[in-house]
Length: 302
Image (cartoon, rainbow, N blue to C red; front, side, top):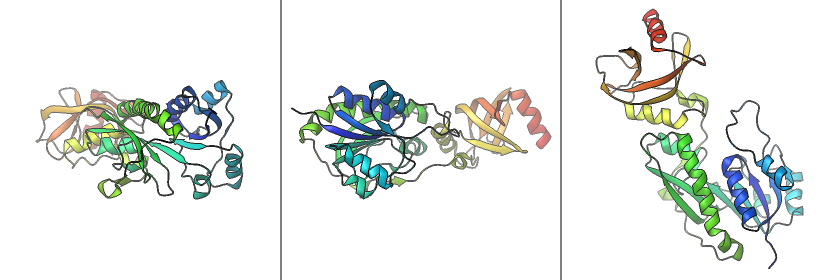
């Protein structure tokens, strides 16, 4: 039986894991389309380019997925199948028409369609998420579902913690369904969009803390954007404070106004419902700050 040829659009850890699954499953990866790492981004994830170099796979890094040159290169690879694994550009209809295409999305579709699905799931206090392989259409995350794997979101999981689980879920999802996919017998399950949700990309400014919110909401924001993401932040007296590590406090501090506070040499973020976050690591303008130093600053600003 001849190997199936594939063009793979891939980036990030999910791109690395799923590319390796295709190779282990006997797929002839004729071309990989990926991204050059940005000098302005915190690159904490693995490199698809490194995998291509190690395996001798041709790869390209176009700035856009809409160019005529990219389309010709995809056609020249003569793929039987195409895959998108955390590739950051939408694929136009001209590319999707080349061969059946499948995308790995970091949620249990139809929930949390769109950008940054793991971060949105944590922000909204979801108790589980996962990875979904689905048919690609011009409309994002709207094609029929091929396979899914769920993972739990524990109460203190950060988005980074959850992303690690989703990586494994993506690998398992693809590994299990790949033989049927290559044989043309993989299922197509309805992706009922009306029962789901769609979210756009997140910006660093979306990490600004509104201390008037209940503590659980503020904690979910912290968990959703905690490092290696930009972090939840608040500005006080001309300084920017970013929460690196925190937990919901068992103490209630209803007598204190919402915002940063120092109590018994501990740093807290007091919220609108009188509950607080116990902050074990806080950055001030990018550098760690102690409870004593913060107390002095807050006293000056009061």
